[in-house]
Length: 125
Image: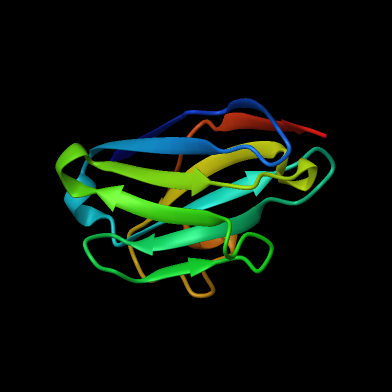
């Protein structure tokens, strides 16, 4: 089993920054990929950024390219999402998810085996 705990959400003004963290515990060695998703009220959950655990591969949604950066610290079993130049449209609950196999396509929620509880991000205009 794998447990995921997100933190770092909050309220910022448009143009501001936040860094989200996702701490992983349990059978961490079994995780191949991890992804940040977000879900705004009334919207479907959407993939934001993926990272290959232990590797260098990443992928981003077009809406966040150039503003968000996903990274990992293997020694701390933690994944991060640095969010810069935040916009009101970025307001959502952000979740981290872990996949035991290659999640193709990576934006599909059903490709992931474990989920965190989420952390809220609010951006005021």
